[in-house]
Amino acid sequence: MLEGKKGLIVGIANEMSIAWGCARVFKREGAELAVTYLNDKARRFVEPLAQEIEAPIFAPLDVREQAQEDALFAEIEQKWGKLDFILHSIAFAPADDLHGRVVDCSRDGFMAAMDISCHSFARLAKRSEPLMRDAGALLTVTYMGSERVIDHYGVMGPVKAALESMTRYMAAELGPKGIRCHAISPGPLLTRAASGIAEFQHLMDKATDRAPSHRLVTIDEIGELAAFLASDRAKSLTGDVVHIDGGYNIMG
Image (cartoon, rainbow, N blue to C red; front, side, top):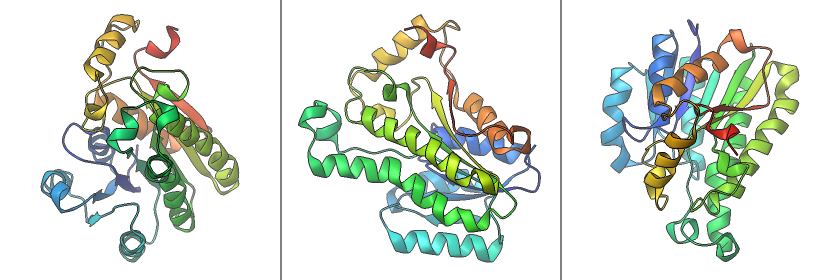
């Protein structure tokens, strides 16, 4: 399904990451992957995973660091000369702002959450655009806290809403070049990022109870969806927020 395609994976933290589930499926389907890691502390967890999928490009990327972004895309252009898809699966908010009320969120905390979780997707899209000469796909990861109030999700709700809106605008702007954009919206599942949300176990238990499927989605199932969206089989789809949560989002 992805034979001959080149993809950039941003957001693997460990073997529980959504990005890792996606990367495994991308690799299985024939894609060649570039994998990034946040910092030296993260590298020891991410590097064995990058080696497992035989990633020819393995580079640091803190999306706040322009020099790292420049070096990454220079290496992609030098080694591949093109890029077919990106998976952007990163989110951050300072703990004090994440755990407090939205109205109490600091300006600096809100700006940091928006920059890392949302605007970084647009920056990566801009850098990818000239490399997607033969069309492409830009994928990000969201959560239904963008659509409705989820206890303890706090400032990340408005930030994810902005990310979904950005996805639609990017789809409209880049569509004439054959570049498609999607936001994948899984239900709650235990990842390193989710572990920072208060009472997240309760959210998972509630999703299991309320979803028509009565189970949580897996990172591998998210990967199957992401691989389809990145493939030519989905070339008529763009601008969507695609729920993959066993139907939890329909239950009111």
